Amino acid sequence: MEDINKQINHSKLLVGKVFDSLTNEQKEVFQEWEQQGNNKEIADDILNAYSFKEWQEKLNAIDTTEEWASFLENMESDSEKPGKVLRLKTIKWMSAAAAVLVVGFAVFTFFKITNSNLKSVEDSSIAPGTTHAELVLSTGEVVDLQQSQDSKMQEGSVALENIKGVLQYNSGSSKHDGEIKTNTLKVPRGGEYQIVLSDGTKVWLNSDTELTYTVPFIGSERRVALEGEAYFDVTPNKELPFIVTSGNQEVQVLGTEFNVSAYRGDNMITTTLVEGKVQVSDNVSNDKEYLLPNEQSVLNKQSDNINKKRVDVYPYIAWKEGRFVFNNVTLEEFLDKVSRWYDVEVFYDDDSLRKLSFTGDLPRYSDMTSILKIVEAEMSVHIDIEDNKKIYVHE
Amino acid sequence: MKVSGKTIQYNSKEFKAIFERLFPSMYILASRILKSEEKGKDIAQEAFVKLWQKDTEDFTSEKALQAYLYVLVKNACISQLRKEKKISNTSLDEGLTIAQKSFLNEILREETYKLLHNAIKELSPQAERVVMLTLEGYRNQDIATELEITINSVKTVKKRAYNRLRELLGSQFVAIVLGNFIQFF
Image 1 (cartoon, rainbow over the protein chains, first blue to last red):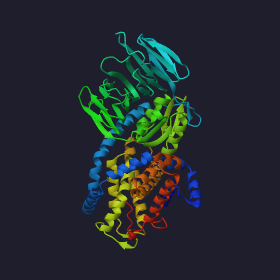
Image 2 (spheres, rainbow over the protein chains, first blue to last red; image 1 turned 120 degrees about the horizontal axis):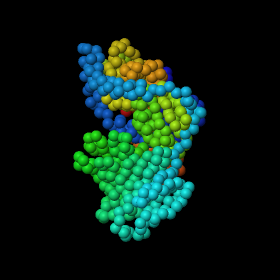
Image 3 (cartoon, chains in turn yellow, orange; image 1 turned 90 degrees about the vertical axis):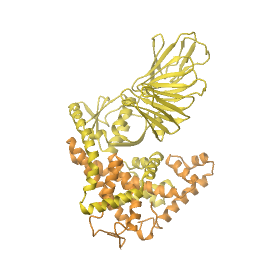
Image 4 (cartoon, rainbow over the protein chains, first blue to last red; image 1 turned 45 degrees about the vertical axis):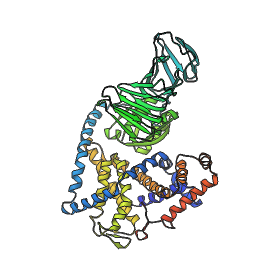
């Protein structure tokens, strides 16, 4: 009770800080509080525009009149048979949760291996990914691309240059010799790369991603194939639609900015629109949705259905700005994304750990241990690391 | 039940006002802890019912009642987490400490957001932008540049918002007393 009242008072200090209105005495109290434990990180996490906006949306979605009516109803049935109504409601989701956990327990038992090679987070070091990729030319030749090594190549009539981590196709010659030349840019786990296609379209490729395209674009469209995650900034051209295919999904645009996440292991494809307008379609079900800015489509690979919702786009594109931003995702979703960048594997002692909720805005270009320290502190879990490659999460 | 010395009934206008002020944060908090809106809603509703199971409860203020509700929600969430953990057969005590710690942090979040929300809701759209940009990490000078206003206007907006909040919550910025009938939500 006393702790709770303290927190209620701390909230006033946090708000006073936002409004630059703390008295000198309050500032001292606040600084003292910030220095305890991980309070500073918690305060930063709370005073965050994105998570506040999300809270406001939740608040606006609550129908207090309806909730008041169900409260009265619960009170009346409670006086007859205590607790009955409430329990009935909860059984549905409890049995669903039970099913998930039983499966989880089997998997957990299977993976539990004893290991003597483990180190704590403090004693480990996991470097972030770097700017590197492989380019597969139409001849089948594979070129290693690094940020530090500039190079020039020729693909048919199109000249290409690799300068400071950006692969650039020159638009100079629009003629092609009739032969279709296909190139693939492959970014491994622990890598990222940027490419400028022959029409000027910029694409940022995240770790574990492949982009395939023709050089130059041919016919009445600009078509590329994506597996993994990429952010597209498409040069407008009304005559030539730009099409991104990923599995059964096609995203068709005229000129706009959007992010597509289509990893082979994921059971959905997520398309998030930042600017302009795109059409997302599934070529098996012919399901189709138009996205406007701040809308996101999620294509379910099993059912080939597409669902659309409004989102704050920032967490979905933050990777391109050098941040990991997650708002109320499961620890598993968070570590899945992060592990592609640090090229590590994650194991959980107990399946309930996967479901812990994680919120954070963290740097992408620092050692992974700085992220893991925050996870340990915020979520009260312990993490051991084997050979700087395998991450074990336990209670 | 007595709140601030006044006896109220569960189906009274007074309690309806308290419910409307306090239900949303209980619901949002429980949903976030349990990662399910449905579970969160059930637990918040259940807490308000449990509040009435002790007939003789005497709360010195709405703040005291709110703290008691937080405790009810916390206990219900812990017992829910315990039920889920029992199925996967792991130690309970660890789970309790996780919940305890993150709970207090989530209460801080709820209370902070409620204050911010109340500060903002009566302000002009521009003043709201000032607050949002502050939360996005902008300094006063950068906010002034972004909104094409002077840095002094930025400072004034902030001061005014804070003062309004103090008015709303009483001059001492202290307990929210039911008798005052402050629209705190």
